[in-house]
Image (cartoon, rainbow, N blue to C red; front, side, top):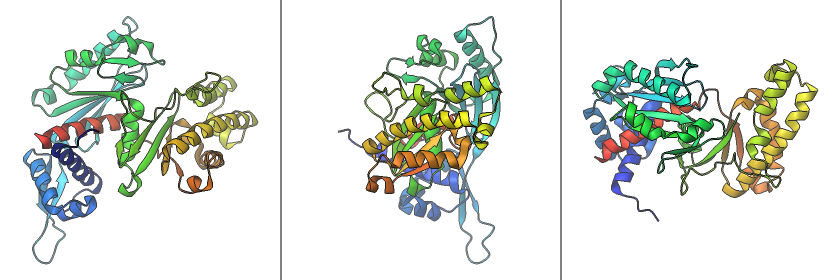
Length: 373
């Protein structure tokens, strides 16, 4: 069993304090202590370290009219910056985030037909380096988060990806180290980053046992316990998109959004409008998709027993009728006790953005190093 160190505890406490400040806005140290269930002494020590680094600031509460005015603590969004790069599709893009994960600037790459995949990627990263030259020079860019559609194996600097095969021949870690020397780079699957963004949007009381499922062109998932993504021996737990049925078909092949998108394109129809109109062809297609997805999620519920399953992806645009039908099919495969404690929820639009999650992962790693040093 891995031993938990004092540094681990301090890093986790720092994240709780920081997440509380990010969610609550200006508040007192006592407010933070109450929200995190940490002692005022622990909270004050961590806030002092953050103030010293210029990451948070304190000011008098102008609203107080009687007695001594308490000090309010708030984040300094412009204190540091984070760059998040999206490699989940062939159309590269990036977002520059402030330290509070507010969007500062967006970047998009126009593909050069004379360059191959790696050549285009290198050109885009060089462009980003030029755009962020000042932040790189003064150390205010604390890191880069890279979201991919691949399963990234950091120990080998290798990606496994069926959607973009060119990623498998690239050493992404080495590429970013070459083009952005001295900048910490966090590379992971887009599902993981999106899951972390969704978790940040939950109330603390809802974070106990959560399974996040993304069902889109690709399918993936992540298990979170106590607000933290669970890691396995070589990858994060819950990656169910590549699980195969007895005929050798993966979950992704059985329920992926491509099934709906391709048929809708063939008919020249909008999938959401067709669902709302209860078009017969889509009702029939979705009956099969819902059944297969329910089997997959029910098996996960039996195995992992989460209190909450959050589903994200283009199917969420189908709304409550879709959620209700899926929920009924999942629970019909569970015993009463298990079904009664399970909630199925559709992710709110944009809450689980993978780039926001990537930026959050960079910030968490940087904060952990800051408070443990």
